[in-house]
Amino acid sequence: MANDYAFLAFNVAYLTLAAVLFCAERLWPYERDWLKNDGQIGADLAHTVLNKSAVQVMVAVGAAFGLAEVALRDGGLHDVWPSDWAMPLQVALAMVLVEAGLYTAHRLAHEWPFLWRFHAVHHSSTRLTFVNTGRFHVVDTTASILMSQPILFLAGAPIEIFKWVSATTAFIGMLTHCNVDMRFGWLNYVFNTPVLHRFHHSRDLAEGNKNYGENLMLFDLLCGTHYYRPYRPSSRIGIDQPMPATFLGQLKHPFLGLKLFGREIGATRRRGRSAPADAAGL
Ligand SMILES: [Zn+2]
Ligand SMILES: [Zn+2]
Image 1 (tube, rainbow, N blue to C red):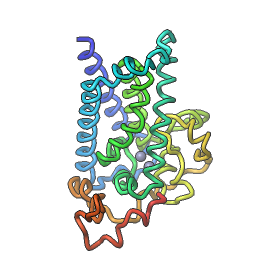
Image 2 (cartoon, helix red, strand yellow):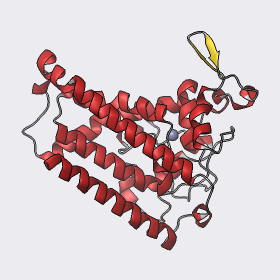
Image 3 (spheres, helix red, strand yellow):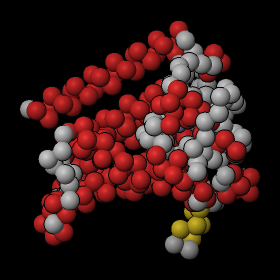
């Protein structure tokens, strides 16, 4: 019953934030052109639903296999987790641990052409709004989760911590994509913010290959990829390589011309132009 209540509370809060951002984007837009329909709302929402479903399946599978229990029983790592800390401190620690995986996954998605094929779906959007928060290829999402969540499992974090981290990631993700003119000052050095993420989506590689943090900027600061300047980020975002306009086309696109197990699958006439390696820098 408690889990049902927490699930309901999360969804009510999530939808409330979406409604608030919907209104705020129209009242105080950062970029008025981004309010226009880009014909991608259906694809954006379909990716969102698929990703949410995939995340829930992965959590269920993880729980079914009892990864945390395995860690507790075989590794004795549960002693590592500071269960006696105040809950906010435990959540903060978990956010840092998870961010290490998320930062690595995101940076790899930009620097490794194979993963860029999938991450390009997210960057193919030509506007930023809370609606395209969940516009990720499901393979991209899966890679991020596999590189981040097991850290918490292995550290023996209780399930409440997973819920707090997931909820915080969901809320920060929606905020970083929103098209609302807001200022965050020194928080740009702590959290991922809309202005930092607009730099990240820039077509200019000097700005675009920066700010990989999903929630926190800690690893960007440590690794020299933090980018924050006082000028207004360009509204010219997106990628140069082609991307289908439909949801199914976007799901299929990264596999075109891809060699798996020695075989090329889904060869396409456009392969030469659309090779992700050509745009791997963004
Ligand atoms: Zn990215
Ligand atoms: Zn983004």
